[in-house]
Image 1 (cartoon, rainbow, N blue to C red):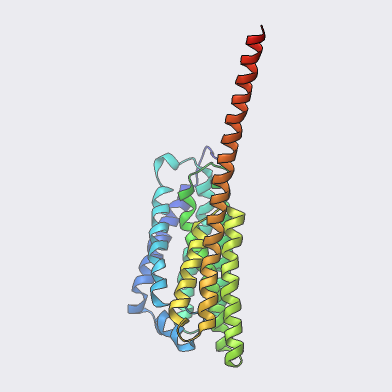
Image 2 (image 1 turned 120 degrees about the vertical axis):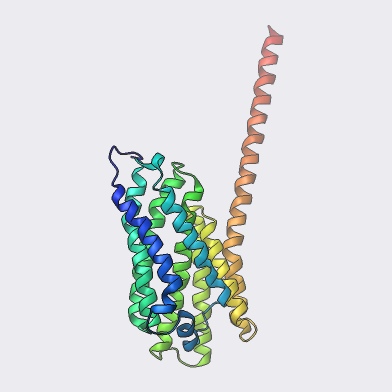
Length: 279
């Protein structure tokens, strides 16, 4: 059911508050939080999976998307839309987890931050699946799922990055050849994940985020480690290439359907004309 008679709008207002607090916490945490900045902690471990600094600007896009969604779900015309009630609680949880992750990572609690980001990943998948399903059923416009596509895409990348830092913090990384192999495997997994989601969910936004991260990894490490750079470019191209191929095939299929339709109509008209002539 898309609609319901009574909406739990209280949770929607809590969702809006959670977004505002999360944004403020993220941007002002450096001024009052103990520990080092997120960038400083990341650089300390020297992970080869770490993307260039500009890649983290995607959080601005994520926060704008979250805020826009929070406003939209509070509009009076959405009052009886059941979807927004189903999204509200995990959406609140996602914002609280984000603040918890920032706190633990800044304080260099890498193992704890890894556990938190795994929960964030599960919540992001839940949000994405719930809202993407209704979009694919054409109950809602495609743009509604975009904030959650971007969020889940980046959390997938951040989870892999956090795992690479955890490996280094526990001194499990081994010698340089082993590090290169592990990093190339991680980057390739990210690219294949973009292909899978693009195929399974008919989504362009998620693979675009994966490509964004892979290009940033190339920019950061491509000159020093050619092998990582090559795999990063390949992984960036895979999801975008797959999606473009899917679009081309769909367009070709539609042209074929229309061509067959016109051919069928033409044959039917000819048969009708022949019948009338015979009479």
